[in-house]
Image: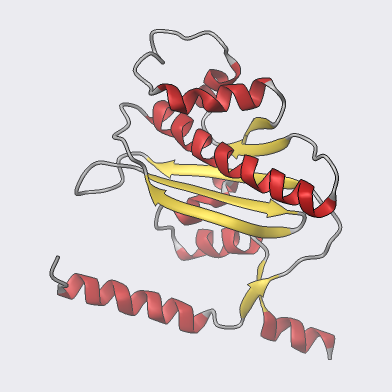
Length: 197
């Protein structure tokens, strides 16, 4: 693909953002040691191939420890299917993180909460019976059901306005972006230094 003027504008936008946030870092307070995650996607967000972008962020305690943002391998037929697929992808990442954290701290973790803003996909993950509405979904994505049934994860509904994974899947207005950034515990270090003096 040949770079165009639009690509140049986007690259400059990214560089300006990086320059403006050079003193931002994650702030951990160590009060809570619990693995939680948020999952989101933009249904058919790609203008070229109608594929959705999967987003997930994972926090252990007070701040984020990992995140993911990638294009889905399939074209979802509905918003529910797309959120269900995202939950499965995030569930796989949660299993890996749980193994890592349990090896590091030598203790078993409580069920990991995955925050999702789609009630129908949560119901699908809790229902062990295959229905006509799920028969078109590839079997590999039903892995999320087994994780819910054995108690490794728990899907929990979160309001869209408080859904921080939106940062990883779609462009947001400045105010909302900054709100979600603060929820991720990304803080400006220069402000912290001045407060401590």
